[in-house]
Image (cartoon, rainbow, N blue to C red):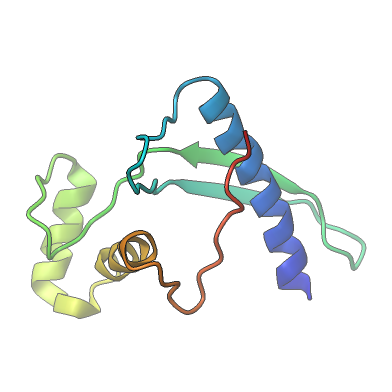
Length: 126
């Protein structure tokens, strides 16, 4: 499917970036402990002649800004303060609410389950 082809391109690019971060000592494991990393990436695709275009990585953040209204997090940026205000006004219907995504990510690591719709990267080799 088109989705699978797009995801394969994105997954390959992400694997390269993560591998480079590991090889450069910027992303390190903690021996014998479970851990996970949350990062965000933005892609653009070239237009193809009825085909899927080439994927281009536009931005990769190893420390994205996440907002979880159920966590006791400091509101250190204007964006987080805006998200918090929207959540207080709209409750669970607020557009920015990363609680579900964060809970699912933690469940993959600590409960060894994969929530529906999640696709995991292949573990880095070496």
